[in-house]
Image (cartoon, rainbow, N blue to C red):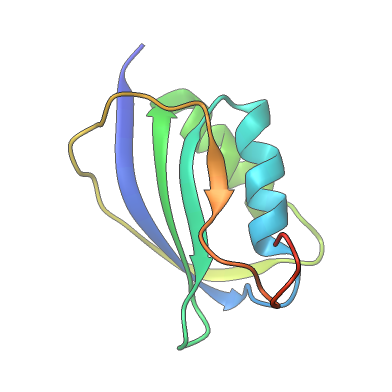
Length: 99
């Protein structure tokens, strides 16, 4: 199975709606690794790695969430790293909270 890795930038209603928590939860279902973080400009940045078929299903599930409204995605591909089994938020949304 071919694996891919890449940064993905999401815009729309993607902050303060549980996007990072949802991404972490869904990534486990699809055995993806990487991280997700809020950007100061209102977008969400994600770096994700895994089988391309799993990545496609992951994006479809993210888009299907009723509280998340993705208006645009910028996706690139970069070389894969040795696989990790973790997908984490990069920093907490609020100090003292896990996501």
